[in-house]
Image (cartoon, rainbow, N blue to C red; front, side, top):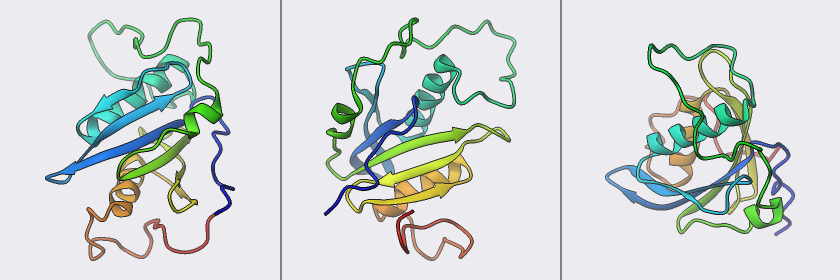
Length: 163
């Protein structure tokens, strides 16, 4: 199979490796170019918080809304201050999950959510998503953890041709 969809294409591109599904909780690892170590997660919510920390530390993509908090916020420790890439794209793309592997490229952070594209590496298919919720449903749907009856025709799916 030709790997035409396997590329990072953005400084904030990440590889999401899903290793387990327990009680509909997706667990696994997350890789980005600014650290050699994986960020482990036991729920998809935890993965989303890791990703948000990465995007905040990079300030890319720039959010259109600011976080609302009274607490002092520190820069996430996930990324070194100098923002130097440590891992090359080829090395990132060599990481794989036991159950599924996805390349996530968030292009915008608008309306308090994310917009971008996700590539399911095992199927070499890319789909655009309009929100974090759609991205999560795509990952879960790829792993057969979401009932197909829940999906409406307007929601993105892995069916059809790759972009």
